[in-house]
Amino acid sequence: MSAAAQRRTNRLVRTLAVAGTGVAVLTLPLLGATAASAATPAATTVSTTPAGYPNNLDGWIRESLAIMKEKAIPGTYNGIYRNVIRESSGNPNAINLWDSNAAKGIPSKGLLQVIDPTFNAYHVAGTSFNVYDPVANITAACNYAAKRYGSIDNVFGAY
Image 1 (cartoon, rainbow, N blue to C red):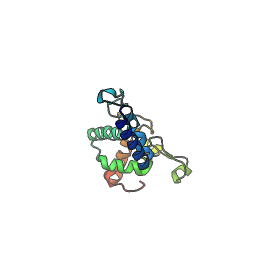
Image 2 (tube, rainbow, N blue to C red):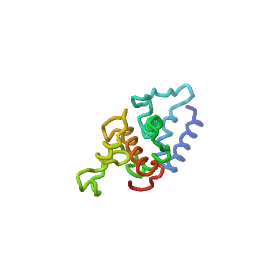
Image 3 (spheres, rainbow, N blue to C red):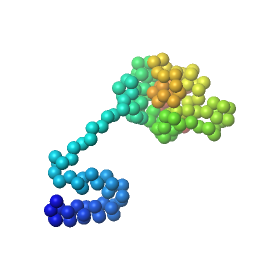
Image 4 (cartoon, rainbow, N blue to C red):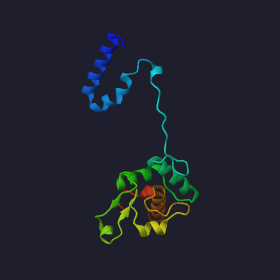
């Protein structure tokens, strides 16, 4: 690397360090590259659900919506996402051990914080019987919300 290029690199690192360590860390892989051909992207594998959706919140919601469409259960991506974030912050293993349901021995579980009796009553055929399964949890909760409120889109608080 030429002296001028080294000075530019050093200046870039100092500038980014002032902007924040997180940004500097993101740029570190660029410092060793002298040409575009020097950096080869690493092969990455994306985890998917058995149905082929990404194994993350976006994929779980989209897979649930596909099942809901087949079963005529109303709901939208935004309605599901809003409620998931409020109920569990997107953690499929969330469990509420402090509310009135928990005090009765039936804590709310999963992405949409469903209690076991509700999950069992509103379980949707073709999904897992595990309340912590993200797609089963979303789909059962949306089925319940559809029967009680018309749609998960109409739920804006604990339900």
